[in-house]
Amino acid sequence: MVKKIPSAPFVKGAEGISHSLYQPPITIFGGPMRIDVHSHLIFLDYLQFLGGRSSLPKGVLEGGTYFVSCNGGYQHASPLNHADVDGKLRAMEDLGIDMSVLSHGIPGPELLGGDEADDWASRINDHLAEVVAQHPGKFAAWATLGWGSAKRTIAEIDRCINQLGFKGIYLFSNINQRTLDSPEFWPVYKHVAEMGVPMDMHPTAPLNLNGIDQRPLMPGMAYMFDTSLATIRLMMSGLFQELPDLKLIVPHTGGFVPYIRGRVERMIDAWTPPEDWEKLTQPASNYFDKIYVDTVAHSPEALEYCYKSYGPEKLLYGTDHPFAHFNEYNVMIDNLACTEAERALINGGNAQRLLNL
Image 1 (cartoon, rainbow, N blue to C red):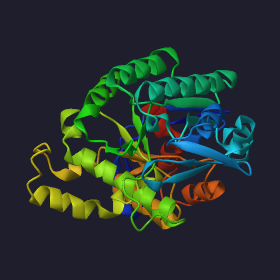
Image 2: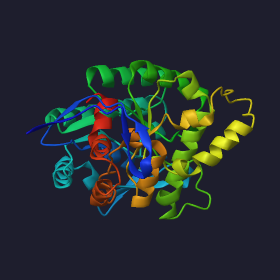
Image 3: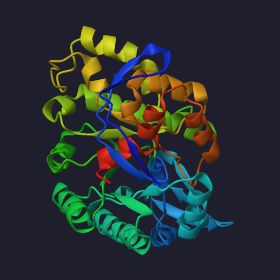
Image 4: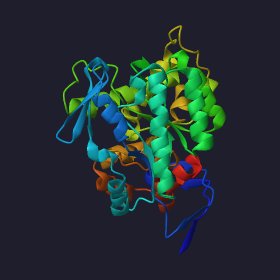
């Protein structure tokens, strides 16, 4: 059965909030698609390479998991089954996911620095491209970047988008302990904006672990803090003013951003930015409204707040597979107080439009 979701310029959602929706007609077989924009697939060769290193980042295999030590005292656990494509396909079938947009995730190759980082980024992307090609219609991919040099990073973006058919770039919340608003990264952002593809951010080894270096505080809070700091610094830097068409997806329902945006907006609007920040000409809320967030919330209340804060056209379905509590996310979206047209946008319509799927 073919089902068409009609265009809806304005839809009134929960609490009587009107959200403007750009929703071209979407033809869907068997009902609305569910597209997971937050799904990880580790390249096992890269973990094995880290396991042979004597300097950071370096890994050690214990009990079926690589524990990778990074700069700043951070250690990431990467189980071997996070490289299992068949396991991911089974999980997708169980959860009713039609397509997953794959990202390599942490630890990323940028931790290596220089040509070595760029070389491994290319290898990781080749692996993702191979998986996508082997399973037509089931997977798409985000481009992993090494950030060893702007020239090679831009060349890899061109290769991934134009030759491999990737749908956007994968961006960590800091790049080897450098903040994302650093001027050295702006040529890459400009190139991405010109290509018209989105950037998908994900936390990595946080800039600061002081006092939050213990589990579960590190993944539970440090990741969210690093993501939020990166997002707000990008806004305050003037990046979205200079590149108004740049598209950024922030994971885990935007970290802390939805809950502190009102306070931060007032601070930005009331105080003169530091000299190394662009003088913003628009209200801060305009820049906050530009970002997209995925639905990896850990409570229905958090998801509902994001829905009210950003509107359904800015929410994209995500699971954080193979890390998180997947079916709970489906239940939260299924029970969200919104219209069915809005639910279809969240589950897949927004991803189809934003990623040109």
